Image 1 (tube, rainbow, N blue to C red):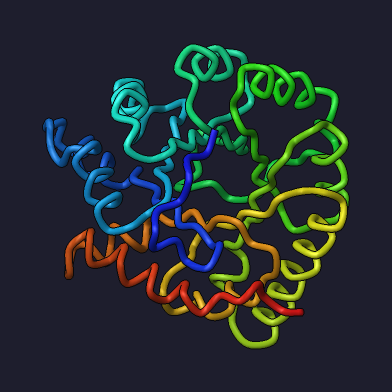
Image 2 (cartoon, helix red, strand yellow):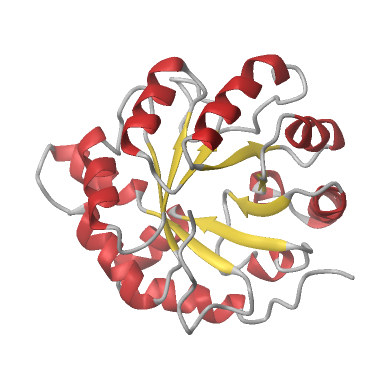
Length: 254
């Protein structure tokens, strides 16, 4: 389960740092560095509230040993992103991360391209959510900000959803405004039907002010932009800068 937040928790809004792309650099050359555990320790020192990793079918970045190592370290709650397939469920039940976020996955995608279709996969996902929950693992579903998926998530007992913010983060002008409205309305509906609301994908300091208009947020899961910024200013400074930006959060739009 979640640990108590540190003294510099950002007004109730948490930061989960995704360290996948630290592993991407390692896997590019098959070296033992950069070390994912070292990255997690730096994030903890900077004030992050959790570590997120995605163990993909093709193992393009995070490997099984990374998940085991981070769980054994235990310095921050571990959130494992994974596909809802039997092999991954078995792995999660053996490792027992603090949280699991179920995500869609396609081998050819560069990164996760959209949300999980909970509305049509309800019967398939319900036993997965139940098995993970019974093992004491907090479950989240990565979804598009659509009422059908929110209602389906609640109906199968998922306590959390993570709203896919990628479309908003790449949109401009009136399209960005429409996408932000979708996220705001989804968060309101999710909160009303008893879900807790996380958000992630494509978030960086430039679009963070819009993200902070989303109400009822619990955690932002951010990875790629932090690792990119770390190239210039270091990982600890990048995490601290994101936390400083998040201090503006007052619960989103009223």
